[in-house]
Length: 454
View 1 (spheres, rainbow, N blue to C red):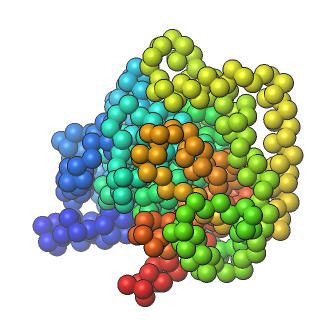
View 2 (view 1 turned 90 degrees about the vertical axis):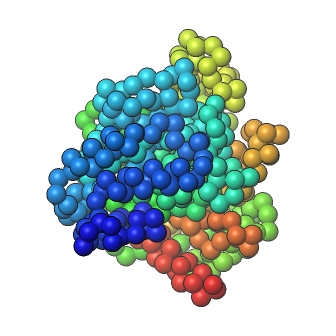
View 3 (view 1 turned 135 degrees about the vertical axis):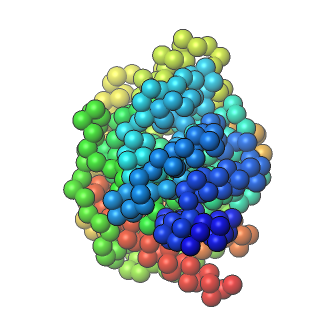
């Protein structure tokens, strides 16, 4: 069948749909052109900080080997890359113009995407130096939330989440230290997969808190997020924090699921509470559990000496480039000075105890299901208070990397006001396949319920 017979403007950018179209005769050069058209139609200058010119994308599409999705599982898929991840020959800023430079080499994860057949569209916007959960801490235009432009897009991986939600990219890479791969997924109604720490290399990624940074994957469905994760996971001898796991495909979902007890359920408005109640009804084998200790760990990330690790990452650049940092980024960085080496060791000891407590928790429960976010801030709220809403957004995310846990955020039943609401499934290190299976099952149940309600 000739490619002209395939209606690309109505085709969802999902792997199964695109590979079906390619099998029927579509050309990846038409798909990248359609991605450019969709971006132009979105009318949002904040999504991408750098866009690969269409002639270069067409040339890359033409250079792909013959269609073989078994050997190249991401063949012809348009992907977007957060602009703190190196793409060879393309500018990288980490949302800081003074930091702009052109890397000579791809980050390991980008090289692996290309090796799997993906086509890189460009670099997406972010909270500067990946410091924030709101998506508005950028000197460039703020990406518009795909569901309500008056709301924050979520961050720090704002552009990556919006690029997937707007159907421009099939898969997008973000990073996740405090929830940056989960919060923007939840606020834009897409999937955000945050792998176990160390399973995906961070070579070529601008660090935030290097000891707990993760590269995350955004997609419209769990299967695509898993395919992206599969393509980029694995050992990297250049990454001292690389800790690969034996590869296991998703199997049966876990059944002993904990949810926060009422005292630990912090939801800011009635629509969020209604959505959580609807999501809870789709889960099987749930039991309320005390997660107050985990929520306490969440506060350690910005109220503890891990802020100083950000100073290690880009404090030298800030000192050498006065005035270059976003005012909020700079204020966070300045907070590092209040912690001593003794504070850092004391916090490490406390965290070690909390990790053992988390091990005991997950010996009793296979997974923890939480609301992905407790609130859905308006952009105007951030203008009045740049810190409060950001801290609130990290309620159910900040503790995950510190405790060496895996997580996946997935859309659930929508709020009564029509905005997306999501659930995040959290499990111990190495539970990534089980969490993906649970997320896929939950997504299927959500689709069935919403279909019956339509």
